[in-house]
Length: 425
Picture 1 (cartoon, rainbow, N blue to C red):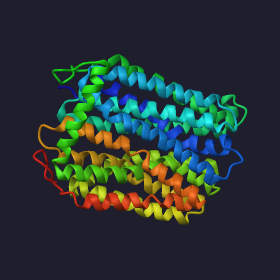
Picture 2 (cartoon, one colour):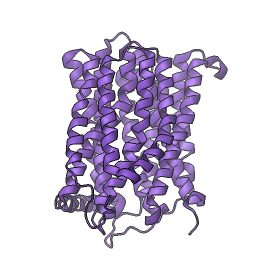
Picture 3 (cartoon, rainbow, N blue to C red):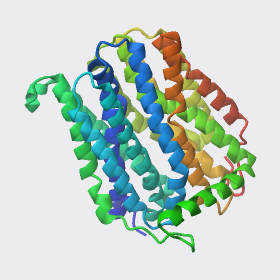
Picture 4 (cartoon, rainbow, N blue to C red):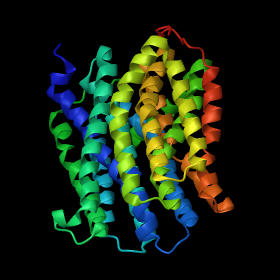
């Protein structure tokens, strides 16, 4: 079989990561937190704005988390994975584009559009993950999956760099000021996301659904609920798998929260917006090579040890954030986070693969992806509650250490080699 990097369907699949990572970078982590506080929540205490943003992130994550098990099971039971991806992508694109038309002070509308876009983004990713099985053979999963991650870092970073330049030099783009540039940036993300989804829509062909009783419509939803219950019982029979999934849910929630709330935290501290966005851009490009380096480290010394190292770095970075005061310190923190951001995701996936019993790969990885979707509301909600109760942005970000401690302790108890399908490292 030809190299996956040369096949049209594989490249088209990876381009979707290139496409939707623009939302993750420009909107989710970059401009929306800043704009939400300084434009849509203007005149409001920073802790109130932080709590609003935390609740918006948390609500979007919770809604997708509730729906994720059913959507994920449907992805296995139907041959409509690509159609579902395109439908949820359309919702995400529309929500993102609408951000460009919301006026100053209208934080409720901004939060609503953000929640809609976030639901579309996360739900589409469920079917994107499932399509990996349609564009790669089992022996290629690691390489093709990493190919998608790499394309995402590069694509998201590239458009974000253009968007940052738009805010710094709006006149170059025919815009009146930085605020207009940010609003225009939201629309460029929607366009970028839509355009680079076209190759997947045209070139990726689904394989038939694996279940003999594959159905559609409401019957598929009912069947999906039944399958979810069976999968949960199977997971609970394997202690090392269920223990890892609980650990993963906790520490990856902390990882996601830092990524989505870091810029908002910097704004609350009074740091210049341009510096915060530049630091986020730096994180994107540091994460690309460091993910490859940590992959080598995990292969040599064990994926579990690599994950624990990443968790320790995140724990230290979260504590350091409490005393952070200057732009230089924020840049240093951005570099440190970038060094482990991609690695903790890729190593978690490969370590889990070694725990999966033989013949249970698709079923168990579906549950793994579900846990990843659940890991997008606990951290933001924790920050929102602490910010409201203490009135202290520093205390709210530091509260995330609880997730890293709990996740690290549970991961430590997971055997380094799993079931029958383990590689033994």
